Length: 318
Length: 257
Image 1 (cartoon, helix red, strand yellow):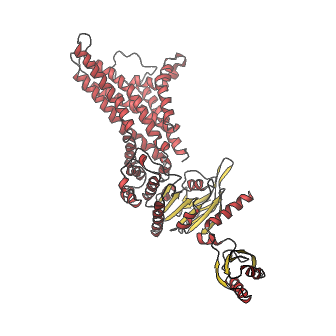
Image 2 (cartoon, each protein chain N blue to C red):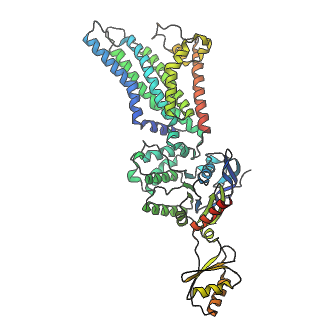
Image 3 (cartoon, one colour):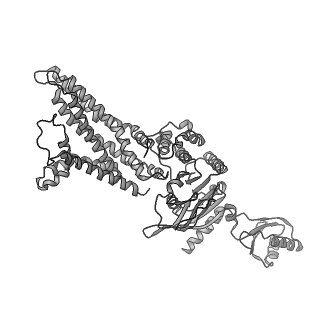
């Protein structure tokens, strides 16, 4: 069974499963990573993120399922696909007695000849040129992360797979990293960013998949996933108690609760729907009842809240 | 495997200062110190201490270099065989898409290119001293020196490949060093003396090296241990190399990255 080469996807898996003995680390994963996007791969520790990455790269054999990278069926065309893939799996490792530049030479030697010429540019891009000729043993964790990214860039990658790349970076480094990811995406490269830092993924990525206990719980655009909880609006008004009573009488309202000068209203509409008609009706009813309405706005559900909702639901089910 | 990968392997070893210095001490330092001491003794008391050079000097120092060189070969071979795995870089190398077989086999010429020049340097010292410090003794001919050089290269190169292969199989440098030194200097000599084993002792490579040692240098050498033909000795050595490299390559290809 193989996955058809779909040029629009950087990574595609179908039913990908990896077991270690009786433990299922990756459970029938169907993942679709669009090209030229920053794709966040979220999951709590031990969710199966790194195992899936190792499987994608062909570092371990899956038990079943199929996958493709950059349109190439794996593992049949592994060596061709990986020529344009740069990856950091877990923390980046180096020969500590060699300099940063020499470590890049080691990896460049295993790649095409042109990789040698990319070393200065890669070091420059991650801001390591001034320290490139120091031994890696003297590097901080943040510098090693940068060197790991530079090592990925030697492939002139169309797909970068970065496993927890922000570990060890200071706030300025994180900001630079975000900018670098944005620039890479602008160059039509795909950045697959595995992390447990939800806030960072929300700020850096357009697409996201959430994994827990080896299963993909949800995938799609970050804005869609953040919105796919129960549709909720917040109404700030002059008399919240009276407003809540009026709102509860409207048939399509699931719940209305007061929070200070605001009524939080959970609607019965479809997940992610705008509910414009219902919101207008609520406004009419409130004005008709003599309640002064100051503002009506959809409640923003952060990716973090959505993530916790999804993973805790799985925990309850387990 | 390509020249760039071999060069990368060489770089990894060349930059290990401790390994470089220990290799130099074992292969060059010891023979230099021994010749210096013997020459001082000879100059101080020529009646009691003869010249350190000559054919006899060459003979003794070749054996000495083969022993110290074997230890150095084990140090270098195990470093070459385990460096990528122990640092965790192996995973990144595999993730480039390069064949694991190519990654393994690049280690062999890389390690030889690092180590054999050091042994050569040690042998140059030996050759120079055996000729220059021959005094009244007959100096070895160029042909004899070259044959001795070939044998030293064979012994140390073989030990290096053996160490590299088994280190790649085991994955732990310390363990491999312990096992190989124990085998080389303790277990193998004991087994060679165990007549109970009979012709099975033919598989011991020490016997093969005894058979291939230049006869002109070691005229007093008894019959080599149970190895009667040069072809037999070559087959034994090739067999060991095939086993070591096969095991190392297999483990590199199957190791979880």
